[in-house]
Image 1 (cartoon, rainbow, N blue to C red):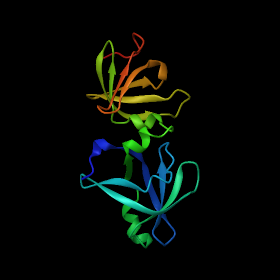
Image 2 (cartoon, rainbow, N blue to C red):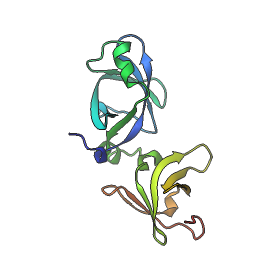
Image 3 (spheres, rainbow, N blue to C red):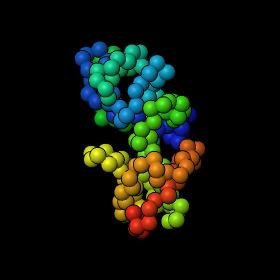
Length: 169
């Protein structure tokens, strides 16, 4: 059985491409390589793998994939708009680690303690920000290496040393 903690968010399936069971797959910063032969989708609370027959790049962040055992646009449409996840090990072994990898990690500050869970990454401005959920509040933390003290991949935690006053709780 696939365990959610062993996977990281990869991106999202787009719409079917053509009529032969191909579909667009948009990445959130990773590139599928030869090692990536499947993604998993959350179907009714269970991660289900979908294996690829072929992968071909369409643009920097979109690939066209042919999913095994899906032979038509109607069959593959089932995946449209579904989130796709890849094994964490593929990312940890990659040199292409992006800020989006940290979605789902706990944000912990040396002085403040646990701040909350990173639920999103805002890269719409020149300064990329982690969007951290703390109860009903959203806290924005700059995604800058100089503030990161340690990354615990196993426990999904980022330890920060944030400047005083940057985050108020």
